[in-house]
Length: 119
Image (cartoon, rainbow, N blue to C red; front, side, top):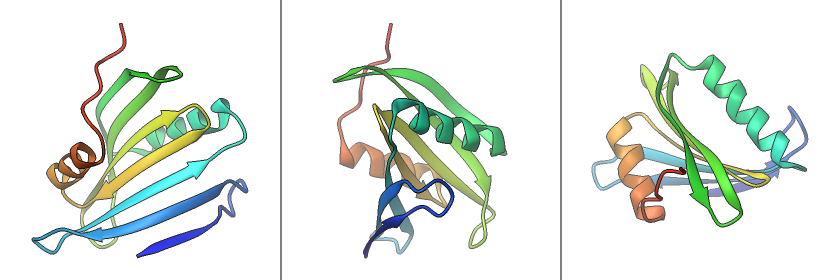
Protein backbone atom coordinates (compact mmCIF):
# COMPACT_ATOMS: atom_id res chain seq x y z
CA UNK A 1 0.00 0.00 0.00
CA UNK A 2 1.27 3.48 -0.83
CA UNK A 3 0.21 6.83 0.58
CA UNK A 4 1.39 10.40 0.14
CA UNK A 5 0.74 13.53 2.11
CA UNK A 6 2.07 16.47 4.04
CA UNK A 7 3.23 16.17 7.64
CA UNK A 8 0.99 18.09 10.02
CA UNK A 9 3.99 18.55 12.30
CA UNK A 10 6.21 20.58 9.96
CA UNK A 11 4.54 20.65 6.55
CA UNK A 12 7.09 18.35 4.91
CA UNK A 13 5.75 16.22 2.03
CA UNK A 14 6.12 12.47 2.48
CA UNK A 15 5.41 9.15 0.87
CA UNK A 16 4.79 5.93 2.77
CA UNK A 17 4.90 2.39 1.44
CA UNK A 18 3.67 -0.65 3.35
CA UNK A 19 4.98 -4.13 2.60
CA UNK A 20 4.30 -7.58 4.03
CA UNK A 21 7.09 -10.15 4.28
CA UNK A 22 6.68 -13.81 3.37
CA UNK A 23 6.33 -14.52 7.11
CA UNK A 24 3.48 -11.98 7.38
CA UNK A 25 5.34 -9.17 9.13
CA UNK A 26 4.62 -5.58 8.10
CA UNK A 27 7.47 -3.33 7.01
CA UNK A 28 7.02 0.37 6.36
CA UNK A 29 9.16 2.66 4.23
CA UNK A 30 8.79 6.39 4.81
CA UNK A 31 10.45 9.10 2.70
CA UNK A 32 10.15 12.67 3.98
CA UNK A 33 11.28 15.68 1.90
CA UNK A 34 12.48 18.70 3.90
CA UNK A 35 13.30 22.22 2.70
CA UNK A 36 16.91 21.91 3.84
CA UNK A 37 19.49 19.39 5.04
CA UNK A 38 19.04 20.86 8.52
CA UNK A 39 15.37 19.82 8.51
CA UNK A 40 16.20 16.19 7.76
CA UNK A 41 18.95 16.10 10.39
CA UNK A 42 16.68 17.78 12.98
CA UNK A 43 14.02 15.10 12.50
CA UNK A 44 16.63 12.33 12.82
CA UNK A 45 17.87 13.93 16.05
CA UNK A 46 14.32 14.17 17.38
CA UNK A 47 13.78 10.42 17.00
CA UNK A 48 17.22 9.52 18.36
CA UNK A 49 16.36 11.50 21.51
CA UNK A 50 12.99 9.68 21.82
CA UNK A 51 14.54 6.23 21.31
CA UNK A 52 14.42 3.52 23.92
CA UNK A 53 17.75 2.35 22.53
CA UNK A 54 20.20 3.65 19.92
CA UNK A 55 21.50 0.45 18.35
CA UNK A 56 23.82 2.10 15.82
CA UNK A 57 24.67 5.59 14.69
CA UNK A 58 27.26 6.43 12.09
CA UNK A 59 28.31 8.68 9.26
CA UNK A 60 27.92 7.09 5.81
CA UNK A 61 29.26 8.06 2.42
CA UNK A 62 26.65 9.33 0.01
CA UNK A 63 26.61 10.81 -3.48
CA UNK A 64 26.44 14.31 -2.08
CA UNK A 65 29.05 13.78 0.67
CA UNK A 66 28.66 12.44 4.16
CA UNK A 67 25.24 11.67 5.58
CA UNK A 68 24.00 10.17 8.83
CA UNK A 69 22.42 6.77 9.55
CA UNK A 70 20.83 5.65 12.81
CA UNK A 71 19.18 2.42 13.95
CA UNK A 72 16.92 2.91 16.96
CA UNK A 73 14.10 1.20 18.81
CA UNK A 74 11.01 2.99 20.08
CA UNK A 75 7.94 1.83 22.00
CA UNK A 76 5.39 0.30 19.67
CA UNK A 77 1.60 -0.01 19.61
CA UNK A 78 1.19 -3.23 17.62
CA UNK A 79 4.43 -4.70 18.97
CA UNK A 80 6.48 -4.06 22.11
CA UNK A 81 9.28 -2.29 20.25
CA UNK A 82 9.62 -0.93 16.73
CA UNK A 83 12.97 -0.77 14.97
CA UNK A 84 13.51 2.32 12.83
CA UNK A 85 16.43 2.64 10.43
CA UNK A 86 16.90 6.28 9.42
CA UNK A 87 19.28 7.81 6.92
CA UNK A 88 19.58 11.38 5.72
CA UNK A 89 20.20 12.16 2.04
CA UNK A 90 20.68 15.90 1.70
CA UNK A 91 17.08 17.15 2.31
CA UNK A 92 15.48 13.68 2.51
CA UNK A 93 14.99 11.48 5.55
CA UNK A 94 14.50 7.84 4.60
CA UNK A 95 13.04 5.48 7.23
CA UNK A 96 12.39 1.75 7.41
CA UNK A 97 10.19 0.53 10.28
CA UNK A 98 9.41 -3.00 11.45
CA UNK A 99 8.63 -4.85 14.67
CA UNK A 100 11.65 -7.09 14.12
CA UNK A 101 15.10 -5.54 13.88
CA UNK A 102 16.28 -8.33 11.60
CA UNK A 103 13.34 -7.77 9.26
CA UNK A 104 14.14 -4.04 9.06
CA UNK A 105 17.83 -4.72 8.37
CA UNK A 106 17.02 -7.36 5.73
CA UNK A 107 14.59 -4.97 4.03
CA UNK A 108 17.23 -2.23 3.99
CA UNK A 109 19.68 -4.60 2.27
CA UNK A 110 17.08 -5.33 -0.41
CA UNK A 111 16.56 -1.62 -1.06
CA UNK A 112 20.20 -0.73 -1.54
CA UNK A 113 23.67 -2.18 -1.31
CA UNK A 114 25.64 -1.73 1.91
CA UNK A 115 27.34 1.65 1.99
CA UNK A 116 30.84 2.06 3.41
CA UNK A 117 31.33 4.08 6.58
CA UNK A 118 32.62 7.61 6.13
CA UNK A 119 36.21 8.22 7.13
